[in-house]
Length: 357
Ligand SMILES: Nc1ncnc2c1ncn2[C@@H]1O[C@H](COP(=O)(O)OP(=O)(O)O)[C@@H](O)[C@H]1O
Ligand SMILES: [Mg+2]
Image 1 (cartoon, protein in one colour):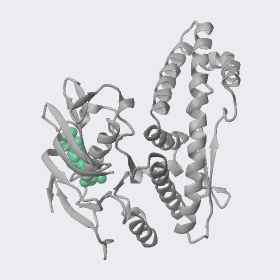
Image 2: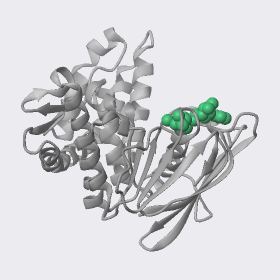
Image 3: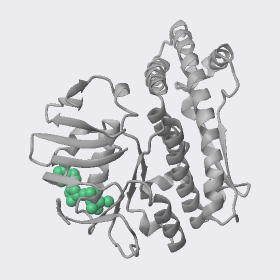
Image 4: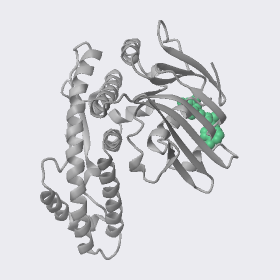
């Protein structure tokens, strides 16, 4: 699939801007704080119905305006599709697909496929486990509606459980009922994560070897307390921790503690990776993510590369440019000097919320 155009109305620093894309490399060049990342964010919102930069929807509304509207046109299986997102200061939020209102996020996510790569993505390699879970979840949610629903339901139960554990009197029967429900979701989520990480590993090995010319080997290991356990065994494990959870006043076991271990040549990158290795591992993971989505959904995602060229050395840049040649990408940069002999590229300048071609 690819994005044909997007119209931004009162979105961030854009008053009313139409942007046309080519099915190739779309490069947005400009100084800092001109509106480059805002473009990436608007495409992300068209895919996920919310931003990754803020949890407050209202922040996307242009200062001093009442509402914000993003309308984007995609080509999917040779058919044009329109996605519209409207949000106003009264917190009214409406998402429409081809003019039909969408009521649940689970009916929306997975329609527009994207892979996003920004300087913040380095947290996947160097940051806390939550960043790695986010990375895996984002891929799983785009792949499976039932994964997304299980995850949403699990999170609701976890919130209820944690608020009960904070009470002076803990209703144990209630927690047992929550544990029962949660073990069902855990079983589904863990199986799905396990399967996707296995596919991600297969792709990562090939890509990593290509980038490093066979000098390095990457390995991924899914860390979870629940691998290989049946629903009943999961429930028993959760129940076993109840007494100590009451003392600690919070949940100790659950998929919110899962992690993904990333090794290069048998050493954990999080602890021992050099700056170059971290970046290469990340590039590998993102491209592997891209390929897993293609295989599983039989559709090509849109690559969003926000300000990452300055993070990569010239070898990795040439690898990446060659790799993305056949696909659609949206790239932002302050310095376009890496562009040399590149075909199928459209360059636009971004200046204070306006575009010049
Ligand atoms: N809600 C908003 N209304 C108006 N301007 C905004 C809003 N949110 C962010 N901005 C402006 O957008 C600019 C940042 O845009 P961004 O796309 O992140 O820049 P960059 O080109 O560096 O990627 C800043 O000038 C910021 O003040
Ligand atoms: Mg930016």
